[in-house]
Length: 566
Image 1 (cartoon, rainbow, N blue to C red):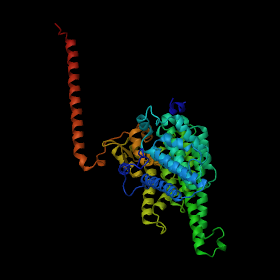
Image 2 (cartoon, rainbow, N blue to C red):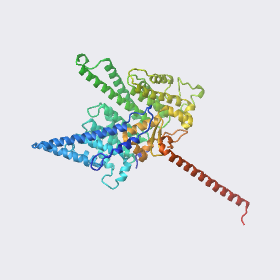
Image 3 (cartoon, helix red, strand yellow):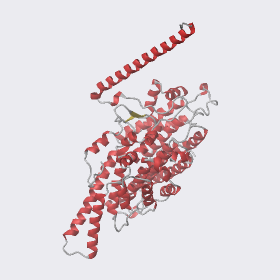
Image 4 (cartoon, rainbow, N blue to C red):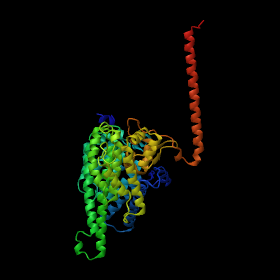
């Protein structure tokens, strides 16, 4: 039984060496297309790929160097000899582990057998294998072989994670990302493994104070993984309990925003711990850098939590219950938006406000507010009554002129807040909102003004169009999960592709992936025209044949009525 039924109730070769670099070029070329002036964030897929490649290269090099240094010594102690043998074994195990099952088996060995360096390397390699090819495809290729990944193997990896036996930031991060991506890669098979124990363990990592392994930087990743797991698990199924997760993340966002803002003000005012006794400029500079790093890390947790709220809201069906939740959230989000101390927090809050205005059910209060009584300043039929005040905040942020903001960042900030302001204007106007819901030419033009357009090519003639905050949040979290392998997931994994379907409304029922000629190279344009001509001619031929058949049927009926049979 699938989990939904329950709710409704660059890759390694066999020798362990990295595969041909061309795989990287292919992965990068498939990433979503975008304009330069957009709210699309940095190329995290390529950054992830480069980071993994560097980690694999560095760890293998370190292991090899230690092995060589020990081998050079003619006389080494019994302990050093055992260390030399362990290094050789680790290196051999890593190079031989070219399948998911091999790596999971290696991770179950004790730390005496597999060192921290080796575990970090194995986990980075595991994550790369998982995201490079959808598990549904991977298992089809390995049916009835030892490399077939079943529930038992996934359960073992989950147990490695929940035992909490990780010793470094890198080990924890890649173990966590491997668990989340492996489950999400085949949610139909492994969704039932998402137990209360696993979710409770993740929630505990989110709510408890950070430590040496689960730092604030990693805590932000924990939140994103928690959200994407919830997204894939509940998409197309029940949203039971999602509102509790939203409430938890909203509380986390408020707490970390307050902490980061206070600390940033202290740093800027010179009010630092022990600053009175510091005369060494280098030491003072070091303390400032450490304090700024702490500010950025806490802000990253707040941003991840705010984005998580926006993403999970897309799982709730339209109606009075959703309206009640988002109306309460707006009182928390508006202060986060009106934040001059941290632009990233303000942008995150703005994006979440954008998706709230998209998914809000304006039909609930339609009878109470007539079109003649429509007021943009104080709008009773909207998520936030004091609409004029909200738009004023966005206008101030849009016209940001602080010298502290770089020209590039100012352009990015302006793009975000302009889109959010357009979203509010479009969705609170009944006529414009109806045009958007109906996807008329005017509605599509309005929709394009509310967020930056992103295309994901699935094949030569099929593409996914990301032109709403609803799809933006879902895409953002899927990109974290599958990184440079997202394109492969969307092409081969129907469950993941369904996550990026548009929400239904009274005029529109889901995403229709149309051919977009602008996505094709000039070299393919002639072929496209031939294809479309052939399609049109085939359609015309079918229509003519259908008409001819209908005429013959009608003629036969008329002859029968005239009784001309002899």
